[in-house]
View (cartoon, rainbow, N blue to C red):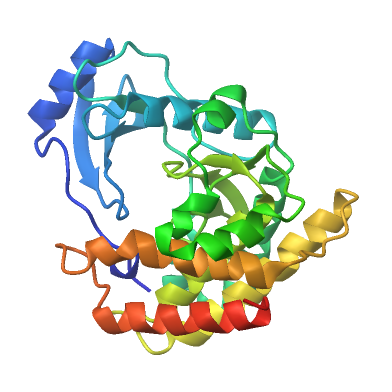
Length: 310
């Protein structure tokens, strides 16, 4: 598998000179060998660079996204405190027009990259990914994330009020730290061990089942990519099997049941959120999503709704 099925977005500064200027304002001079790396379908740009003998990452947000930056900083710090590997934020000044974070560079390769060279490890890598996500869900989201988190249920869109009402009627945990973009391109591994969870742009406080359903929907969507080699589809299914098993095992180890209840509602929510999120992105540069993919998502949404009694 390559990286294209996860999408590439080009935003923000495009030249190392621009990056150096931003770093100087942040009070972090001395950058060398800046290299722009691929990002997801969000609105941030990521650079890999050498600075003072260390490899670091510079994440540049859209103009005005200071609150989003603050959420990510707090979420990564909480994850690290809770035993979940994440980048460490380098203390810096604030940039008036380019909200940015400089972090340590996590060792290893993404699970997506690892699958490309060792597809036979899919199930084991999936299990490591699932265990890490279950540990993440034990972390209580910091106050700044809880206070500034938009309503995650409303992500399903205004056309899904009935679905949203059913989800809100459940007994929900309101304060778990959710990643909401937890997939093989955002989890790094080395020697079979997870070494970093990156890209916290979607982080929220909420019920862990939303994060589980979101990951399941992303893995399903990845298998639909026309750019994905045919051999990768069964590999992704094995990865998903391992992920679910790893999540349940770690949940039981933490004195939780390991059972994830009412999932048809959450799976329906995740499909609706995906449709709401991707519909305006169809046709954008670097986005492979086609109208027929959205049709498949709508059929998947309808199936989960029927299972949930909607």
